[in-house]
Length: 156
Image (cartoon, rainbow, N blue to C red; front, side, top):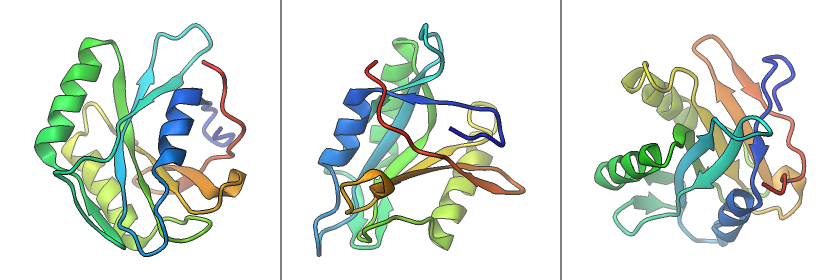
């Protein structure tokens, strides 16, 4: 929930579980995928699908470059199902994740490259802490970054 923006995104159990399942192990590499919402869901905007890490991604302990071709395929498939891309998620090796300067640059670049469809991308970072602070979300705007207030996943 972004109170300042008046936006609430419900998170499906499947989406929350998928991100938690791919937490970065100590000494492991970052993992990530795309975020898709179901804009026509009866309860409102629902984060319905997150894609899983892919073997074609280039990942290090503190970096992740997702494979462009796999992302394009996932976007096409999701669009055919009525879902819409809102951003991407990835893991961090820290317990409680924070946006790095590289993350901010990457999310702003994503917004510039996809200005018509994704003017304000959502960034979700999954840390190692299994509690509520272990997953954080931000709305990355040109002038400011808004951190969401995270609540328990909705059963959607």
